[in-house]
Image (cartoon, rainbow, N blue to C red; front, top):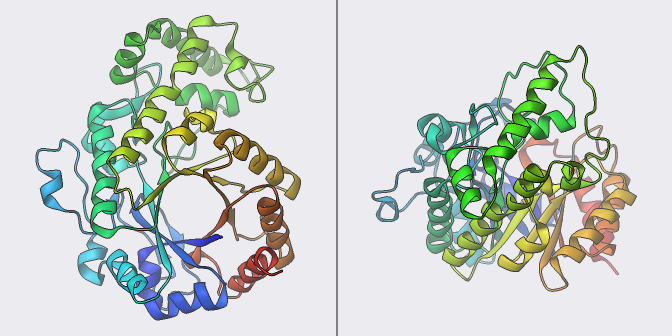
Length: 396
């Protein structure tokens, strides 16, 4: 069984490789480290770091050493974090340790969520129905953005050969909570957020039109909905069946409905291209949420073009976890990898018995493995909670 914990390079640097392996393998009972190899900005409370209780990583950088020969003449290029040159290439160290009998290595790779690159390349970001750029998100329809992600994964898998590579954000992103210091005086509800997240950039418009979709009509419809939302005194629900009905909540608007059906194409084809160019020794899986359709993910289609998916079950009671795993298995089929993702955050997870119950339900419902979040963000004693969860699914 694949048992891993999402981990930042600076946490390994602070704790040391030996201590990290001791914590994750010996104390928590895991067999894999999922290392952030491409990541965005944030502010992180680091409870166990001896010196960095608050950490602010560089925005939109990579935590490995790129092969410059692969990036010549590329329009969008990665920036290696100063952390790598100053404190060492942790991915290389983990791969070396694996060869000596250490833990398996998975690369947790953020794809299109990159504000640094969005600011540098605004022509390749997603844009709402009014044409405003979402600088935090490159667009999966953009040829240059696609080339960037495909080359990124090719570079990592060719030169480091991780056991698995986990794709975060190769899809469209939401509107709220993706940037920082956001302001919303309207009071957006879920459907408002979805409408604002729909991309109508030139790349999407052109790609959709070539597929026979009236993208301009769909954009005009969404523009009207957004304008009406902005005029309301207080937020109101416009679509009674949203989100339960998925895109069928918009079936009365034929052009928009057709556009939403098409919207999965850039995501599925990008993941297929990533897999096609990756080293075949590395398993390629998608990290996604329960309602992946909001970001243009068709999980059944994705399962046909890569090796599987990790479905994050944050804030879910055991019954809901079971539902997600069962629907995920049905979509992916019996032969593809299905993982469950859980945070070990309090009060979301209040005890060892709680995370153990969620983990057991996930495995009983068809999960092949579990990822826990996050090594450097939780107190050391919660590693014992993870061990309780692992023991519950591995001991006879």
